[in-house]
Length: 365
Ligand SMILES: Cc1cc2nc3c(=O)[nH]c(=O)nc-3n(C[C@H](O)[C@H](O)[C@H](O)COP(=O)(O)OP(=O)(O)OC[C@H]3O[C@@H](n4cnc5c(N)ncnc54)[C@H](O)[C@@H]3O)c2cc1C
Image 1 (cartoon, rainbow, N blue to C red):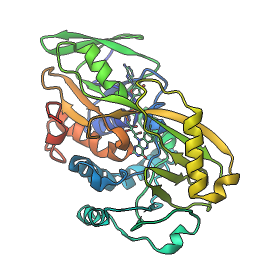
Image 2: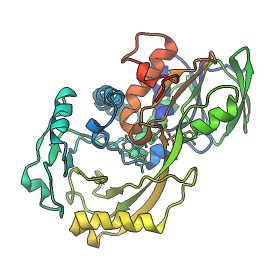
Image 3: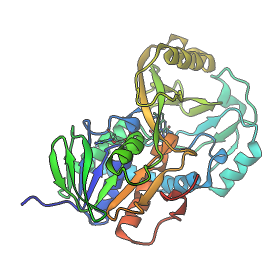
């Protein structure tokens, strides 16, 4: 008879994959169900800046996850390189924030969360055309290259016997008995379940409404983000820059990402000419040397939004063997390692790494 894995995870974005890693580190076996080939949604599409944009303007619950994640990323990256030879390109290249009307708050936040910071020296602006206002330089802020990080994690998990991937498999029905999910019905057949973990990103609201019509759906909905990629040479840009609501991110091979839009379009993930033109305009105005750079790629992803960007990381309050780890909105990459650790703490019932109350499903916000 086929072994039933300890945890059935739905979703193979960064949250599903890192939850899987954290759960196997705790000695559990996992099955990962994914409707596409692995990891092609928001986690693939994101920029990979490992800091929220202006974190001091956001909820403390976000900063707490960020603080823990930032301590976990360097070792995670090292472990993945060693085990898989796929480099997630975790790169502490630094982040320049050009305009900070709330510089005192920014400095206080950096001090509280031990983020190295200073007022940006003028030479950092030599390639840019912008009017800095209390510019802030965060020399140790890192990025990860999303597709590489996901590929590396996917490879790592594939090396473990306690992990089973079921890809191209859509799941939209549960068998519920006495407030427990006993099985899930999927496009690849039925699977018995010990514990079901939903890491379904932007689809979590819609899915929970469909699966558990008697219970409150989880308040997560899609918000589209578009990005472009420009051709440039190694050394043209060596750090990330945030200029008001948009940013440039150099990759290790020199190419430069410009992002991003924030659009309410439900589940429509198509790219638009307007967004491409507006992102391109932003990039060449800020960094005029990019005028000659070829526009190589343009894509979109659906961020899993919650009202204030705080994710849900919790055991379901009514259904005994269901958990949710979703709703990371604009900060899923940077909050993922800590979210995965907290989710595992709750599932295996060990002392939580941080206070779980802000991430509860029953919170009111
Ligand atoms: C343009 C853009 C820029 C971004 N930049 C950054 C950044 O710089 N830094 C940062 O930290 N974050 C950034 N983000 C946000 C970050 O990408 C997301 O918060 C994060 O990827 C969410 O991860 P996830 O695993 O929850 O969702 P996803 O990656 O979307 O994964 C969810 C998975 O669940 C699967 N799924 C859903 N329903 C089902 C079902 N019924 N059956 C089977 N499978 C299912 C989906 O196919 C998908 O693979 C950005 C996002 C975008 C779009």
